[in-house]
Structure formats: structure tokens, C-alpha cells
Length: 382
Picture 1 (tube, rainbow, N blue to C red):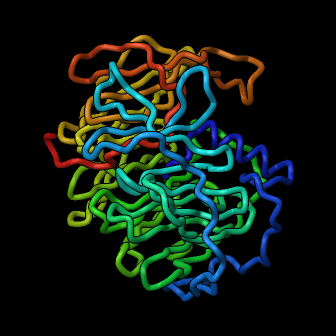
Picture 2 (picture 1 turned 60 degrees about the vertical axis):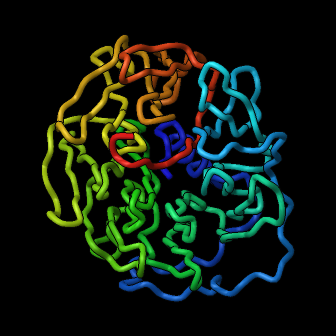
């Protein structure tokens, strides 16, 4: 799960005002001393819950066709979050809809989703109906509830305040406890929080700019083995991360724009200089799309070739917030200058677009927002 720059800014504003980043009335639990965990420890939340399954917050009016490209998002003119079939973009159709109490929904598979609730729960639900399952419950606090599901759907990792958790079939455990988030300003072009399993399911990456000051097992930027939660690599001062390519490689940059690549076999490599914002990878791992800031302050959309270590840009400026719908179709939104907005950052025009990489063409989109797309990954070349 990646937190978009605009969402990062909203979270920081809410936290500075004493609020919770999630719509919940629950109280934060007792604090844990930061920097205490060197190895994964059992969590008290690992015991199976005896509470009844909550009612599903997703409802389908049509069966979900196997093998189709799907999107979770909103359609222009309607704030309802839907599951939309985009296999035939010219005849896209809504299949399911989420209740307003379902937050941050993601696909687990083409037939199952996971989402957060106002009760600070992470809930798994089948699109065909049936009982739901509570994956985890977290306390209120900055960043709490940010989560990612493993490619096979058997594991979930999430943040609960300063604690980083991993839920597997064997239970729920704390991987580490990070330093507390200090009060400070935020720069949406530099601050980010990225938590995600690698496309091959072998690793989990946490690259973020808020829980700072630690090192090793409490460092702000970490890669851990998904099988046992053990620490593989850690560093600090990085931001704007994204997994790409198979075998999985993690790309991230420093404050100066120097892109690095972590590879399970060769370790860390320096790539080109590229000050990307909010990078997103194509399902086949060939491309990384991103926003870059133009000389006039507006965003532009660029594409990084993972194999070629080269870049190309779309035109015109005034585009941001990229998301791959398929291997070649990229969704993004239009933006305009706004001197009265938070930090003087550009604001949305309300118009969204889809860019076809293969055809180098842009059209307006009926999707007003995108939260996830399926499949998450495909074999290279498909």
C-alpha cells in the first residue's frame, strides 16, 4: 500500500490537530517504548477472535468474470467506491459497490477484497458473498491501519501506531517498534509512507519519512523476509519507494533525487538521478510511472524503463497522481496552480486521464479516482 502525497499531507494536518487519521472513536492503546524490537515477537492480538464476523461492506450486483482487468475506484458524478470491470475500456461496467464505511479497499484476488472499517479493523470479504473475516484490529494514531496483502493472500502486514505487524496463518506478531512520529511540517513532494509485499511475495518493504531516528531493526527504511520477518536490509533518508521487476527489485530515492535499486542478489545499486514523486509500477514490472515537478510548479507524468534505466515524459504539464490500470494503461488526474492551497501545492482540476503507453496517446477518463487495480502482477511481456 502506498500513501499518495495528498493523503500524506492530510494525515499530517489531522495529526497536528490532535485527530486520528481514521474515522474512529476508539482510543489509542498504551504506548510502547520505541526501538525495542530486534527480532519478531509474538503479539497479544495473535489469539483467534471469538467475536461474530462483521457484516460485509461490499455488495455485488453482477458476477465478477474470471481473468478480467478490474479497478476499485470512483466514477465521475458519483462518490460511491465500486469494483469496475475495465477489460473492454470502451464498455467498462460497475460490478460491485462498497458502503461508505469501507476505507482503503484493496484486491486480495479477483474474487476477494480487504478494507478498513470505522472500528479500526482490517476486514477480508468475498465478492461472491458469505462471512467476512477480521484480519487485524489497530489503535488510533498517525499511520495506523496502513496495510498490504501478500500476493498469495495468506499474509497481511500493517502499522499499528509505532508497531509494525505481520499476520500469517500462524498468528499476528510485531516485527519491530519504530520511533514515535515527531511533530513537524510535511512536504508532499518529499514525504511518503510505503508498505508493500514484493511482487514475488518473498519480501516486505517499509520506506517512510515519519518514524525517524532509529537504525537497524528500527530504521525508517527496511526490507524484511516475508517468510519469517527477519531483517534483510535497512537504511535511512530514503523516500518514494516502489517494487518493480521479477525477481523483485525495490526502487527508492534520496532527498537529492538519486534513485537506488535494491536487488536480493546484488544488493544496492545507484541508478540515474530522478526526482520522482509517487512512483507506481506496471503489473509486468517493465515501467515505473511517476509525477515530477515542472519548472512552473505543476506536475508532469514520466515513465522510467526498468530494463533500459531511461526516462520519457508525457505532455502537457498539469498531470499527477499516477496509477497503472493495466501493463500499458496509466490513470492520472489533472491539476492546476493554487496559491491558497496547503503549502501552495497544485490542486485537482476535476478532470482525469488515461494514457496509453504503447500508443503514446491520452484520453479523458470516466474514473474520477483509483484505489487499486487487478491483477497486481503479470508475467513479463504480457
